[in-house]
Structure formats: C-alpha cells, structure tokens
Amino acid sequence: MLVDSHCHLDYPDFAEEGLETVVNRAKLAGVGHFLTICTHIAEFDKVLAVANQFPFIHCTVGTHPHHAAEPSEMNVTKDEIVAYTKNPKVVGIGETGLDYHYNHSPPAEQQKTFTTHIEAALESDLPLIIHTREADDDTIRLLRDVGGGKARGVMHCFSGGQKLAEESLALGFYISFSGIITFKKADELREVVKYAPLERILVETDCPYLAPIPYRGKRNEPSFVTYTAQMVAQLKGIAAEEVAEKTTGNFFRLFNKIKMAGAA
Image (cartoon, rainbow, N blue to C red; front, top):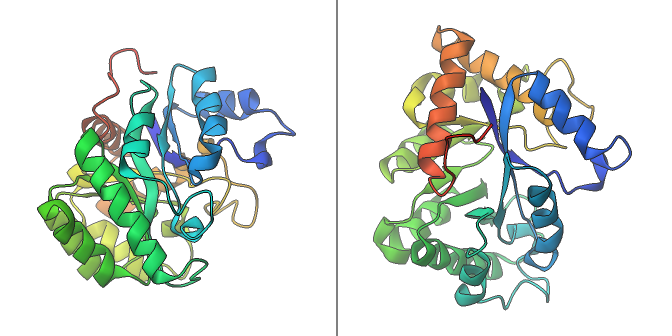
C-alpha cells in the first residue's frame, strides 16, 4: 500500500469528475490512505467535509504562507488552531511555513503565522506540514528557536538542496518527495533522494499540482503518487514494493494519531 501524504482533495479541480471516481482510481493503483491538506483555516470546513466522506482520508488544519496576511488568517491564535485538532480527523498542523519566492504575504507576517503554527503543533503534539521555498535559513531558525526545536513534522514537496535536507533530518523531520523528482531538470533533487534515509522519506502528489512524468502539465491526482514511488525505488536501487512498505510505515509513525489497523 502507498499513502498520498499531501493532496488537496477539496479543490474544485476534482469536482467535475467527482471525488469518489478519483479516489477509487487511486485505490485501484494501490493507494490506501490520503492526507488532504488545509491551506486556509477559514475554509477548513471544506477540507474536513472531504475527510469525513471516507474512512481512509484524514486532514490537517493550517494557513499556507501565501495567505498569512489575509484578514481571515493573520490573527488566528494558537488556541484556535489547537481547538480544531480535537476533531479525530485532524492529524497535523499546516501546511504552514515560509515562501520568499512569491512573497504573496510579507515575510514578517509569514514568520508570525509560522510561529503560531509551531506553537500549536507543540501543544497538540501533532506534526507540522511545512512549505518552504527560498526561505531555508529562516525556516530552520524558527524551528530551532520556537519550542527549542522539539516540533516534529515533514518538509513537504521537498525541492531544496542537501544542506536543507541535512538540517531537516537533524531536527527529526521527515522529507516528502513529489512528482518533481521525475522532472528532467531535477538532477540535484534526485541526489537528495539518494542521500535521504529511506526510513525518513514520504511520498506525495501535492495534487492537483505538479503531475509527474509522463503526466506533467496535466491535472495531478493521488493515483500518480505511484510514479514518484517508482522513481524513489529506481534511485535507491530497491523494489517499488519496499518503497511502498517503508514510506507507508513512515507516514503512520509520523501521523500517529491515525491508527494504522484498518486504515485502508
């Protein structure tokens, strides 16, 4: 069994075909569990509604750094985030983090929101789902400074270099790879896949974005996580079945609020 550890199943991209059809196609491809990710706390109800439709889908709560300065998101408190985590379907905090590539929100607002999410993760004892782009130093600094580096979680859709991988692993974080590792110009990232211990790797789609080769440019979907897993297997020189077994075990260790028995 594979897990799509990061997808956005509440997005309208899946509405026309129907979510049940998309999910069933993934199940047929061997994907047994899904984590659908919140990017606006103000729209959390939509994310939760998806998770409530299926026993094998769980969700997170959080504000994407792009939205950190939006009025509905910028003043959300730690206690408000923690309150959402009382729902049994909520198993992580995020996605949160820093994105200095687009800077859709000012860096100061991003850092403030990220700090609040780290504090909520520590209080709720749930993992963080971190988005970081061109903000490596500040991301690692805040993880170290807020709560003494005790937060746990995953660097989602990893696209950084080996230095960020080393620092993330040193903090106890997992690294999640997406379809980007199949792209022709992703040689540096494929070297990070080779470097990262299999025991600390997750796989994801980040769908509807970043469809892997051979579907690049099309809408991504959870069934395509198999292509990412196959690339990890190729780079590690192991069987795809071992990648599935290890990454699935990693997922349930990290998101340990989910009981693995009967999860599929």
